[in-house]
View 1 (cartoon, rainbow, N blue to C red):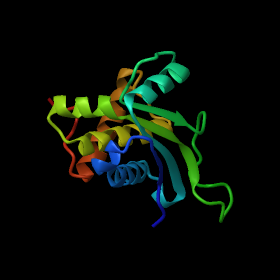
View 2: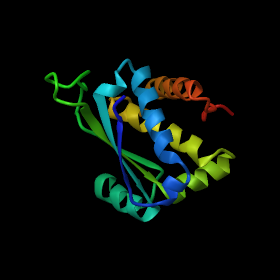
View 3: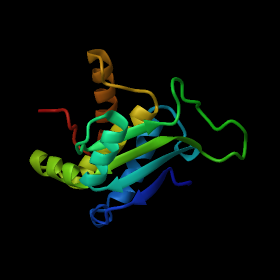
Length: 162
């Protein structure tokens, strides 16, 4: 089994929370649910603090404030299903970044573990990398249903239920 997530850990608190293994499991589950072979895909992951997230959010979205998750798809439009040529290695589909303080505060406020919240944000981010969004109501409902299904397969409660 190939690793799907290629992490860069800038904030060691993420490792202490056991998020690396959770991120791998969540990315693989999201890819599988989307009908993709996780062994044929790769996702970059930056685990950082809120200061770095504010910098990235400002640079890429024009909002210089921290946020929980950011994603940068490698493809505009249709994402190929597999790498172009045999032996080429996994298909890189994009990068995801998580900000520690915001994620930890959201997990605490929701009464869930940081690991479960990180699992949700990884699934959410991978779905974005695959072209899903939540701008329109119907697209949001579809994406949320996919997230809930993937998380249930991991034993994580639906983050959208009351």
